[in-house]
Every structure is written in structure tokens, then in C-alpha cells.
Length: 140
Length: 94
Image (cartoon, rainbow over all chains, first blue to last red; front, top):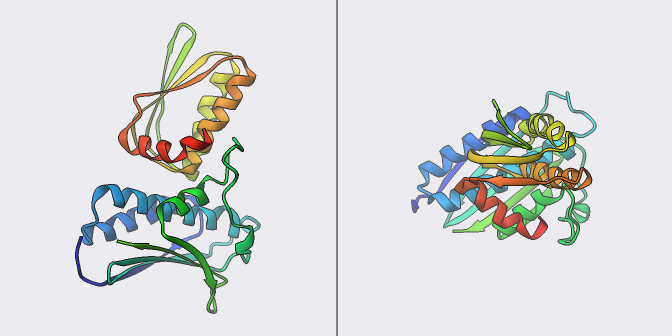
């Protein structure tokens, strides 16, 4: 892994067909940072789940809104921060939790994956014009 | 994503490939669910699946539940390493 500090961000249309582009962007950034393959796969999964939640939940009521979300990846002093910005329906952080382990049904796994992979999954106050601002953090 | 399905007596094997995410999951359901509904045992061959997220896991959970309702079963075959890692994380839910 590189010791250089690094920051990159990119905007994507909020739609399910953008999720592949989000993954491609992240893989390219992690490639530049020389992140090892296993960790890279985990980080891409966590990011993809967060982006999926934006498409699936924050824009649930406006699927054709043609709006953008921004993904920002930064590595400073070996702390990886992945920030997401969107202008969808405000998320109530208290309601964001993975389902119970004995509850075998689809859904809720994405949040579980994010929490398993990252050190912290936090909603911060969205600075205008953004409504939601999610930050995933991991010490590398 | 293109799927290949091989029929062998009472087993249908679906060869999936590429990356299975929210954008693709419904396509997988459209292929797999009718096979389960026909009462056949369904094998999902995942050797050429390079990426799967919670949407793909959801399809597997739904397929298993559907198969139980139809008194048949779904098995995963030749699971690729990237998918195995995701399954390992999700295993406590499966």
C-alpha cells in the first residue's frame, strides 16, 4: 500500500445501472493506492452496498429523478474514508441497522456487510446542497 | 449478462457469469424462479461470477425459500473465490 495521502471523488447518476461504474471507479483508485486484493474486494463491496442503499432507499420515491450522488475516497495517514453525498430522502440514522441474525429473509445484508468490513459507518450532517452524507472509515 | 441453462433429467443447471448486483438480480430471478416453480432441482453454477453483493445473496435466499415451498432444492456449484468470500460473510444469515 502506498504511503501517499490521496483523495479522489466522482459523481454518478443515482440509478442501479451506475453501480457497476461506482465499483470500477473504486477499483481504479484502490489500484493506484496499491491496496492488496483481499482488502480491495472488501472495500469495493462496502462501497457498493452504500451506493446501492442510496439508489434503493434514499431515492425510493423518485426513481427517475436523474440526480447525482458523489463518492469521495480519501486516504490520509493510513485512514481510509469513503464519503457519500446525495440529495435523496433524509435518512434517519437510528433506523439504519442490519436485521437480526436469526431472521432469514432477503434485505438488510448490505448494512451488515458495511459494518463488518469498515471500522465505522456514520451519517454526518449533509452540507448544502446535499441531504445525506454517509462516511465509511477504516484504518489501514 | 447472458445465462446458460443445461437440463439434465430433473436437474436444471444455471451457469451465471459476470457481476451480480442490484441491476442484474431481477434478471437472475427471471431465469431461476420459473425453473424452481416447475419443481426441478436447480443448481446455480457460480464459477464465472466475479462479484456478488447483497442483492445476489438475496436471490439465493429467495431461491432457497421458494424451492422449499415447491419441495425441491437449490444448490450452489463451483463457487468462485470472490463469491465464496461474500457467502462466508453472509453465512450466518443463510
